Image (cartoon, rainbow, N blue to C red; front, side):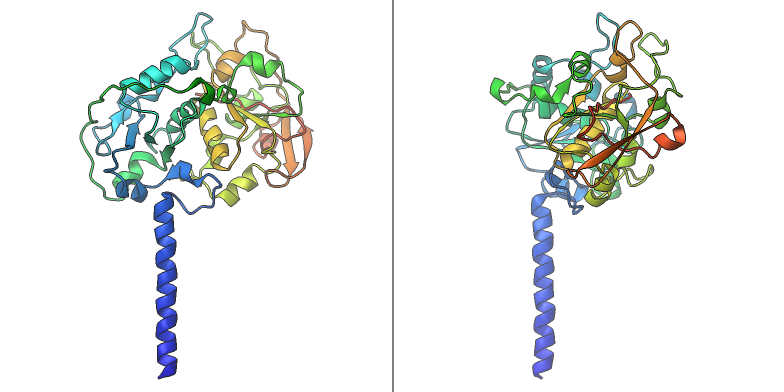
Length: 361
């Protein structure tokens, strides 16, 4: 009889522990993948449990051509491209509109400084790589509470939750970030990077494909003409797509897997990410922030600027591979001759080499 009671109490104890565990997961709001900044990434269940929170603003960042008349209930539509200049006087694309204009856009959309902003896009087109652009902007503005919905609208629909045929109307308010809370250090440009080439504190990460990094595949300027081939000198290459478990689900890898991917990258040094237009670079920026990296910045105009034939930024096609331990460990830098086979194995920059991240559109 005593043995039966003992078994019964053991089962009850296990159930209580499991209940507490799931309650904690729900309270924290996100995944159980072990990220140091796990509150930056949420799942559909978490969002559904908070859908009526008056301080929660859900933002659909998709371009109009990808909307398909399916929205998360209560979401506003704020296309991510509104935050990029269509062109500049120098003919450079991917340029961030700046903090003043960004705050005006956010205010017109009805977002206040104290809101928790939930950003979502679509697996079909973006896989988080446009939600991440607004995440970066909010980071620059020093906005504390911001979340990316993993797998976007598809995650919501697949969970069986209700959808609306359109967004809710925006109610304009004043969005104003105190000057002392702005994080302008999270925003890099070509002049800033060029002045720091060779500085071991700066790690440059090119998140384009290996072919783009090596100059095998060309990026184009706004005029449709080819830009320079290659990458920022001493930059390392980790394709932003490697942050996903696979290219179909576009779920984010676990923290353990991301640590392996970014082995040797020093979180105590600066990391600058870049691509072609800033979009892909923003996703790797987001991933590094999710991993607990604090000193990260995005080169917004990326290869649109650095690869511009009218500007005198140096380039190279030699591939660089980082060999080292998990982020934070000492690392050894190895340079290799340019080859697609070698580059596809290359990883992020280290504390021993000035590395910049380049991103493509």
